[in-house]
Amino acid sequence: MDLLLDSGRAPGDVLVITTGDPHPWATHELSFGDAAYWAQHDAGDDVFYADAAVAERAASRSVVVVALNGGSEDAAVTALSLAHSRAGALLIVCGDPQRINSVLGAGV
Image 1 (cartoon, rainbow, N blue to C red):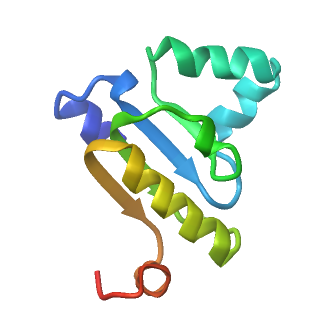
Image 2: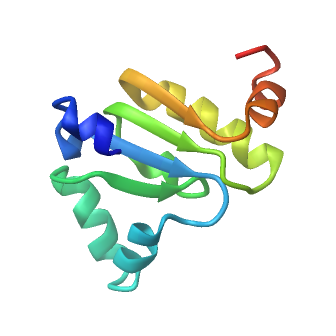
């Protein structure tokens, strides 16, 4: 994330989707309630972290990062497909290369 921001990307340009445990930021923000969490998304001022199960609700952003940090294969496939459709300029996939290749069905 630091590299993206240091390279000039605005925080509001970035969506991060996790397939396993939610990012600590998402957990923290959700502690204030679902409405407040999605209000942060709608404001578009900061990096937004979403679990794959709810990421369909997230709007497109210039940069989408997918963290394959656990979860089922179905969650990974869904997250990657969704991320591909939401990424305006850059899609970054993080995780075990073997799992990424397995999910994508190709050598990456």
